[in-house]
Amino acid sequence: MVKDIVCGMMINEHKPPAKSSYEGKEYYFCSDNCKSKFESNPREYIKEPEKGKDEK
Image (tube, rainbow, N blue to C red; front, side, top):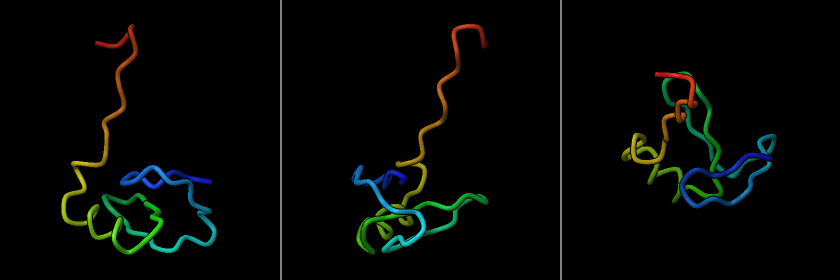
């Protein structure tokens, strides 16, 4: 299971209702509506990994 990064719903990545590829990575969505929101502005939904305490 993976999380739809638009609405937070858990999705079966083997049978997703919708999916999109961005910068070489696959993203899975609960609906075409969430997919469209993502594709209109992917950077709004993709969060950069937080750096650890030891990283600068």
